[in-house]
Image (cartoon, rainbow, N blue to C red; front, side):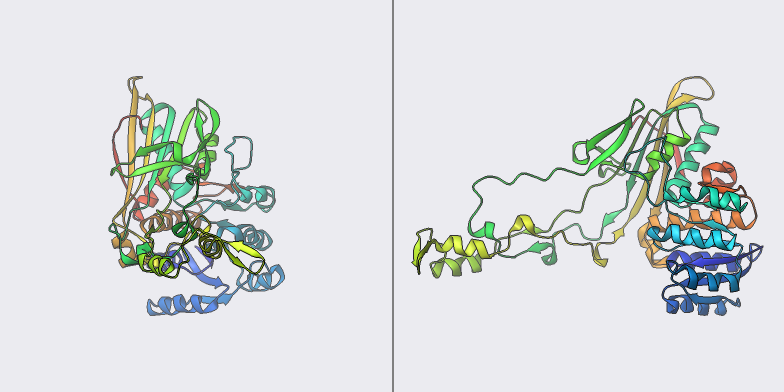
Length: 422
């Protein structure tokens, strides 16, 4: 049993807290700390309603001196970091100074270009410090790379003598609204409505991403490679931390790609006819120059110069109304040599989650639910000393079967099937 300090209060924290309370064999004491102590107190009241006392505190992990005062008082055995990824190194520093174990769900600072020579993420810079303390830090204990890597390792152990191709597809569900609503239409009057450009505006190129082809890292425009997911959604090539993880853990896999849904479509623009008609009526659509003082200018040019340009409008952020609904899937397609008869085979492993159900029950997306399930499984294994090794690691450093069974028990459902090369 461990004294567990959870940094950060969010919906995953809520789930983890409830699970640790329901299964008291893992922890002796639970501490919650976040920059906003009120969020912690809400969860403290939840724990109290379940008959468990939880200690809460405000904390700024970047303020080492202040944070260490709290750490010395609490003296935790394990720090569970659920703060934003960019605070991972600060949280790890606290664990080092407190000489305790550490776990988090997300890798931070993964190199942009996949490589088997670079560190997997910034967290691994702390390897020596945890090793010197004889303490264990396990990072990326979420869906990626933790659960996904483990599923691939389990597949290799059961099905494959050798893996040569891995394709991963992330589909975060459908958007709430498929039809165009009034709020999806942009009626702003732009300069291009008044005076169309002489030359057609070219589409912006997609983001530059990376994949592995015949053992070599290849850079490509994300918009140039597309495919169809399990449910028929169009997905595009993308970069992911899982690529570097796979290069390190599965050196035989010479072809590795990651796909996801494309960028959110912009609002439909409709030129406001009434405003254009008013400009026409006022003579402001004329291209004949008029003299104003010592300057001659065409009214249409003047109007166009003061209106916003469509090409410069900011991309709108997704709102709560844009949250995913329906099924989210995380698909893994593995090709290689069969373990039984040396034939080339392809297996598919589909992780499914229902966004409508996870939002209703846990107030989080299906992908966040999957991430939480993978983390909760890892926390329980650490509390039972099943993950014990001095240094910084991902779940790939430990027994595959126990973690695979653990996160399935926490709610990750996997459908295995025969497939064809993606």
